[in-house]
Amino acid sequence: MDITLTLNKEKEKSVRRRKSSRARQRTIAFYLFIAPWLIGFVLLAIAPLLIGFATSLTNYDGFDPADAKFIGLRNYERAFTDKDTSYSLGRTLLWTAINTPIWLVLSFSMALILNQRAIKGKGFFRTLYYLPSIIPVVAAVWIWRIILDNNFGLLNASIGLVRPGTAIPFISTYAIYSLTAIAVWTGLGAGMVIFLAGLQNIPEELKEAARIDGANSLQVLRHVILPLMTPIIFFQLVLGMINAFQQLVLPMLLAPGQEVGGWNPPRSSFLYMIHTYRQLFVFQRYGYATALLWLLFIVVLIITLLTFKTARYWVYYEVEVEGGEP
Amino acid sequence: MTTRREASFTNRLTAHFASYGSLILVGLLISIPLAWFVITSFKPQEEYMSYPVRFFPRELFLDTYRSALTMIDYFRFAGHSVILSLTHTTLTVITSAMAGFAFARFNVPGRNKLFVIVIAMLIVPVIILQIPQFIIFSKLGLTGTWWPWVLWGLAASPFFIFLFRQFFAAFPKELEDAAEIDGCGPFRTFVSVFLPNSKAVLATAFILNFTAQWGDYINPFLFLKDSNTTLAVKLQTGYLSPQGQTLTTIILAAAVLYVLPVVIIFFVGQKHILEGVVTTGLKG
Image (cartoon, rainbow over the protein chains, first blue to last red):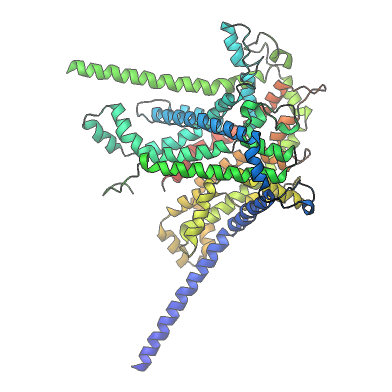
């Protein structure tokens, strides 16, 4: 009796040991698999964030770190009195407010149209609309510069057919609207593809049921398709805004200005990131520039959180229906 | 009854008309800039700057293309672009697939918390990392070299980790069990069971990342020297007349040649990109 019990216990132990040694092996394997990403995350994200924050508390000028002096929050105070900071933040808010809705509405509408069963040539249009998304930004800006140019651009030339001598300064005075055109042109296809994938996931039965109940196409759109698409619209809205806030390259390339490096675009497209990079690469104000980065991070965080707060009023989260698709 | 059917028929006809109308309108807004880009690349600079604007070139002027290839050492910088894009893409696809596999198939302590970090990194404005990285890399003497691309590649991409996780999570458990019974360790299972069955998503990640790297302007501009930079930067800075004027049509010719490889890659792989990826990402 005693002996069997001990034997059983021994057996149990060895099973448990084998199990736990397998679990330990799995854990080790897991961390080996994610090691490159995890190390990269610590060295290329966490470390830069901390060093960036430390730099923002100094007057570091990019040369000898030993010369940098700790100046507390003075760089942050400076941001609140610097007119260029508030101006560029205002421009960035305007740019985000123009760019994001146009992009969302247009890419969603095109996805809706292409999702209709009766439409022919879907593949052709989808490919055509997506094409600008893969064009490198340098080329995309050149493509638009020869359209928007004051004197030799296609747009002014075309208007000139009706009103000779037209030379609207799209690239300088109206730069922010030109940037919107470029951004929407390049981003339309990528946005549309996401919406299309979402639309194709809407069960046909739901739309059919609504139609049998007497709903016309507009009502189906309003009461079936739109509610089901709100999670994707929300996701795209958040990502679109975060991207818009980070915009740096488009204004830099469209109208570089006279200064070296393209850090002096026209005031119309003087976005926040341009201001930040200019502080660093033109004036060597490393401390101030990193402070501006942290402030941007906070602004984006607040706006993202506010958007998330609005979600419960308009984003529809599907309740699991019995027998529905997983 | 008949009238109602007729009415719905006209309604449908109008809807149809409106649909095709907007498809074609947007199609034109997309393609006119592309067409104008290619057309203008075949004009000499004087014709581009002539007034009134000539809509179609007088002749197919190929000198712009000749100058585009000879004014700068075009193929050397194209080579830099290829090397950097391939290195970064190969590394990042491997490390992202590894991490995606681990997050999808290993139920171990700490996994979910770490995956939250991956998701958070998807929406963190990454540009706030660039300047601090620049400060660190320049202190380590890595600016002006290609090493940052190796490091960025090794660090994997949150977006691709997410993509691979979604994809690998859909594999049946039996497949993994069978491999384990056959004596495969986790690594063997990953390499000889999962990867061979993931060609579509691997190709997608490869194409998307290669295209993004090929088109990247700001990183080569900030991190590299004039002698080892990529085509993206050279295109912007390399074509000036002796008087310092921008040679627009030569730049356009160079840009056509620069765009061509990614357009070709896109047409080869578009089926995967447009159908595979996004759906994988959405089915959370």
